Length: 160
Image 1 (cartoon, rainbow, N blue to C red):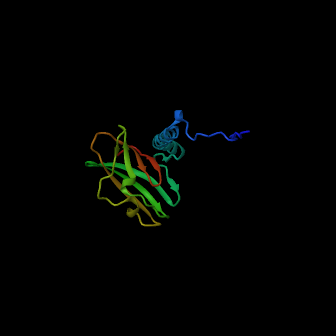
Image 2: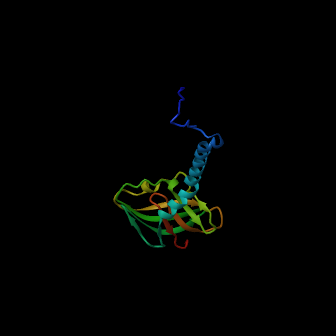
Image 3: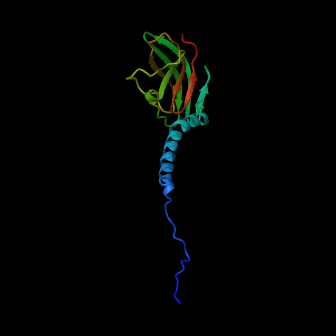
């Protein structure tokens, strides 16, 4: 009698020829979707969750060692000058790149270069006045002063 060998385990194919590249395509699509979500979905969600503090005309912003109120908006020649009464009792790192003026036509204006940054205009722990100059190129009037560090939006009083 001859012995016949019986295989107890079936031969397993590691790759199905009809499904080649599924993992590769899944990885590529996962990366593409992740990048799109990171750049298009997350920023609006962050802006919604961490909205800037809005301060009305004549109201005082008082938070974490910074007390500020917009006192005047004046046009001097070709510039808008926005004055703030400020008291700083903690370190404030805002620079000119953190400040801009929004106009009633929807445009934004950066400050005139060469002026001192807001924290350098006020002695530490003492009340002082910060004067910020912005170019008044168009006929639009300023509506809002925006400071990015910390996130504050000052609604401005009518220019005088």
